[in-house]
Length: 498
Image (tube, rainbow, N blue to C red):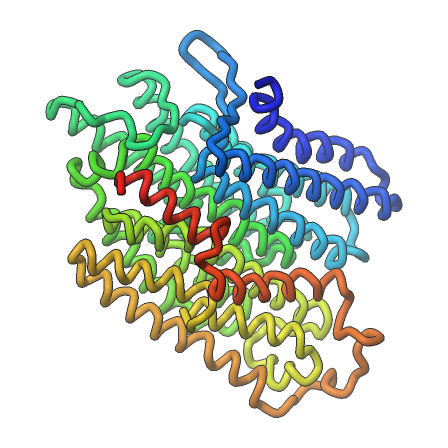
């Protein structure tokens, strides 16, 4: 029993303790810092794997204590938290490997990896939060710990991006806090429970609950990059590639959309949310964001900015799936939370490899780059085709079930949005792939030798290759019992009583 109650806390401690130690390590102790980073990432992954198996077997994990009368700090593992915690743990390990290689010659490495660990601890705290109060604590901790990573380079562009990031995210945090306080004052502590808390509430409470719902979603929508609250995300692309990967695939953006999932399913309950009349407007907002992000991506000439607007679009698939109000839409939303993270981190790893190895930042500089960096180009191709939704890749599974969910809910407009978005995905990714594979190289680097047998450092190459393989495996073996798809089916059955 003691072990089960402490395990969620240990998952957080692996990052928090290491963060404080790393801050104290001198800059020249590179091997020690790398050892601590990798050891913490491996230990965290093992602990999450233990909890995953335990939750699968019906074991209950919760760390819980009362901060003040009626105010409870709670960390617990349930099927939804395991999905997000598992994604974060796997991708943190790979991003740590990548960041060690990417920042090998950079200054202020101890500062970077210290805040990097704080950022991951915040993300795991969000994943394992057992109630709204605990979620809010780690949500704000994530805002503050990600800021030093955004401004890490210290340039004017980085500092400007950091200011924009803080304006957006602190404003969103204030709205979220207002919603949490109103919820607490009217209804008390709000633990995350299946089916929510409002199955038997009087109609007189509906206006207040709608207002609270709007405040909570508005606060979360900033990090989830829902239009028109998305402006911070493209600006943050001045950060180093490991930070971009972290923001888009593991931490900040995912924290926002994960929070939306929690509010709809585990605070209000999916059926009550539908009765409250808030799901359809949420679906419209997600649809608008999907199309807007895709259209803006078409006109970006910088590779990372195109990927950033792609994230604006792709993450909103999750919100759209929730708003479809049905088990198939839920499956599509939850599985896309994982699949999008793996596909997007692959793309940002590859973009970082092109920039770090060959100085490529613009799309028109990618001509023939596959001849010099074939493995990176293969990984980028799998990530891009997965985003488009080409079978049998992971992205196809997500889009297929989102489409089925739209048909099940008889929301045919959502099917049209998915089709249009897929065409736009193809329109902004396929020209990049054409340049990479079919254009003649025009840059001086085309005849430069590779690094020994590899096209770049193995620390930079291994992570995108691993995630690219996952994109393929998670599509081909989607029905495997412990796959993200199987967990999404399990959650959908639980929410809808199938």
